[in-house]
Image 1 (cartoon, helix red, strand yellow):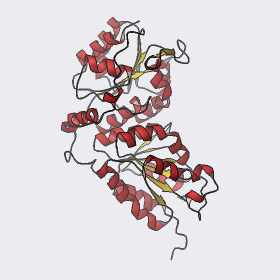
Image 2 (cartoon, each protein chain N blue to C red):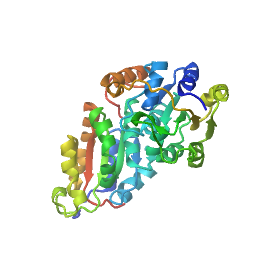
Image 3 (cartoon, each protein chain N blue to C red):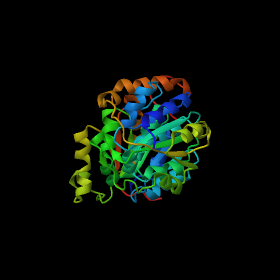
Image 4 (cartoon, each protein chain N blue to C red):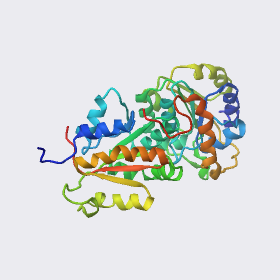
Length: 200
Length: 171
């Protein structure tokens, strides 16, 4: 088993200029480890990180998009695995942090805790490359390869429940966070700057 | 002279494209399947994203909007109802241009949606009004002219909009 903060510190070493889309508890821990305007935390309703990331991946096909999903979140949007695989974004890396609990909501166990196979779900959904990690050394060693691989790539990170980060929901849902991200990706966009989504 | 004033699928698809939309996220809906979704699926200018669930489409359209890509979410009113929490969070509270084209399954052709015998149809407009979401009805061919400006306005003002398709659109 690994710790989430250890995994995230390794990822931060290799992220480069990737856009990172973390969900809820992962978002608070990720922001604390790697504050960066290319973090996209405005994922709206729970479970939607992978779907927002798919939109970003299709809209910015030349950028790497990394999702840091939760196991409870992914269970709420399990069909997104099939949708992502069908769309086939080559620039998408989808990690799920599996600790078997709804950590942000009192630590209750997820249904199927210890039985569900998230990597198996992703593999059967049609992700191009699928891995499961329960040791930091192997995860760390494979990270550069995972981030360089043609996607969609899936990685299940088996972690132990740890100390909870400070939950600041108003911050992740704030207009300031969305505007910061919007400004950060502006150099990646073609066409007019600063206007509404252009036609085409 | 055309006697039937039901909108043609080609008119609606042309309006969607005229608004600059090149991405469509969709789940099949029998009201719009033949005339709109099949046409979009076969249109080389359109990237169709087939969904497992409608709320995914809200998020995908949101993600694309940050990238200056216009998108439409095509679904049935049942899918809209199922997606209201995503629409609430991402469309309304974040203020993003989520443009939805929604087939009203069970609506009577010659009766306003608000007076439908079908409960699921009757509540759609009041729910959207309560959420403060712009809406337009597309019942007749002449209504189609409203669609592209509504999408333009949604992107210009960064707010969601729902176009309600009140009649079955045949291929």
